[in-house]
Length: 538
Length: 40
Image 1 (cartoon, each protein chain N blue to C red):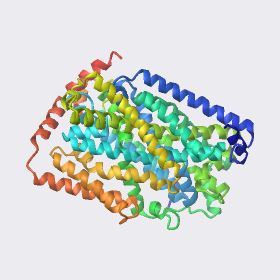
Image 2 (cartoon, rainbow over the protein chains, first blue to last red; image 1 turned 180 degrees about the horizontal axis):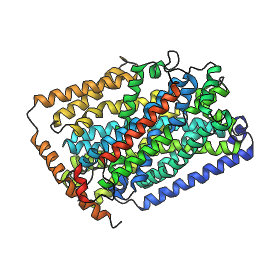
Image 3 (tube, rainbow over the protein chains, first blue to last red; image 1 turned 135 degrees about the horizontal axis):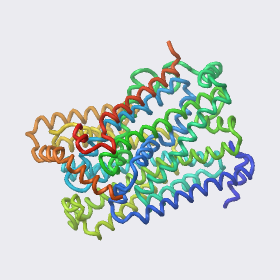
Image 4 (cartoon, chains in turn yellow, brown; image 1 turned 180 degrees about the vertical axis):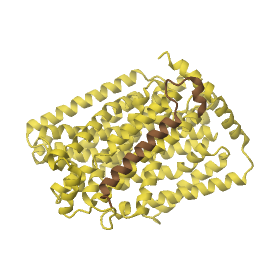
């Protein structure tokens, strides 16, 4: 079956000879081998759900931070976003203006208390639904957010569609093989090694991605001269590119004016609330390591986000007639680098796709294992364990083992759904990706913000806010009343927040939750000392 | 007025500096002794 891609490869973009193809295939095979070895290491280090979901506090804070940065940036930053700049000119640079520093500020603001609340009363929370369920003492919020987290399968599909397209263009591999290969590799090491493998592979991938971003960005020097950014923008303008602040023709929904830009900024900031990103905070070993975590998140975000989009401008300056905007990066690589280097860089870009795919699979799997299976099936339904026992870390080992395997089944389930969506090769990649994200965020944003900021927020209010937020999303977007998810998300969140405030104010104070909040913050500093003493032997 | 592409760099670097400042302001370092963690 290898002969088919070899024959097709002569038509591909960067690879023009069989020697180059063999080089690319060997590089990718070596790289996949390393990933699978990391998966094996993770498998050997995973016994209980705590290992699987958050790496049992044995991961270094700076690894987790870099992983946050590169997972946030995702493959889109290396393919789709330079494409925006290729088609819309400099106004598209608003994307990196809001998606680089704002998430860094956001995670700096939110990590501290999210971490503190996540450690209340026993074992550390393992997932976002776990955090919400414990914060509001609500089985409903836990199970409901757990189930809608499966919407992230759309996002996974978006990632592997990108990988399949890249494999097809670069290696000439049939699309279906490309999506199959990429999802299978990620699914195998995530199913095996959970959070440990996800973070360690992300560490390797983040170093590759940051190097690529910097090298490709500064390659502008030998293409356009020392003042490469100024010269590239001028050259693009000479070819008819928009070099102003806003665009009214191409992508006005994103970069058309202050309102459009504010709505993408809001989404960029809210993005850090997604379960596969916020669970990074919970994986940090102790409170003193949060600074290291947050700083390295910023470093990862900066290097993975601030540079690659400029390549869209470079590519336009060199050739304004590409058929697909997404081809801007491969086209530029082919122009600026010797083929062998361009191939190596492209294999690196595929690794960018895997960082997001693996984090999504791991995030959903941990939720399936912990919230849907361990709490939903074992505790609430079959009564094999009580929620109090789980929180105290006293789950019977048989239940614990079954939960880890449920999480692994969650990887297979999510990967299968994603593969099914991707097989149809939907034409609107961004819409597919954003559908999952917007739906999930519409439900969880209000409960999450209130859980974090508002001591008095009641259980019923948080539950109602979730239902109303997710319901508004269904009515407005799926029901076809509003077409832009950029607008649907702020609207459904606003409605959901309003419901939350009204219900909390209408009810009498929920003293159980308030007491727990007060005790937690009072006990917090002692707890921190205990954890760091335990951790010091590591 | 400065070209937009230069403005983008100013925005990005400005945000990174704010983020770094917040991080040092909000989080005690690893070497901090236990009484410093009270400043939260």
